[in-house]
Length: 171
Image (cartoon, rainbow, N blue to C red; front, side):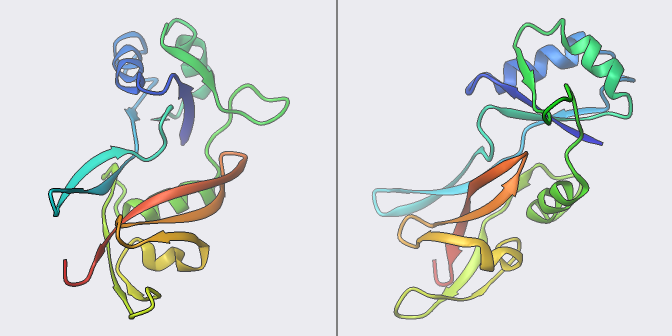
């Protein structure tokens, strides 16, 4: 199961290194960040780079959550595990995990790729490639010139806006 850990924004890599160093491998099968491809416009040219999809959050895959939580207390970069009221530690729900896997397009990949979109003259999205095609109904903001859209979805216990990079057909 996947679990979410909140850490200091900008220190996600350090926290992951500490977890990999201090938590037993049998307890923490995988520790990872989710990233997204984004587009920068530099001197008129579009450049693709990656950035954190959820700044301040890292994910772990474990079959031993109680043991993982106990060992995690010794990781200095750890801030807190995201949990529900009355519980210290809970897994990402099946619906949330399915949403994230659909965004990622593959189970083994940790980066949300750009979606290619076709737009009309008014800037309405007519067609979209994966992963945005699954979430067109959730779009709350689109900035075609800046090559992103925002979707709003309930995730990790609250409403969140997630920025997804796009490539406009013809780029």
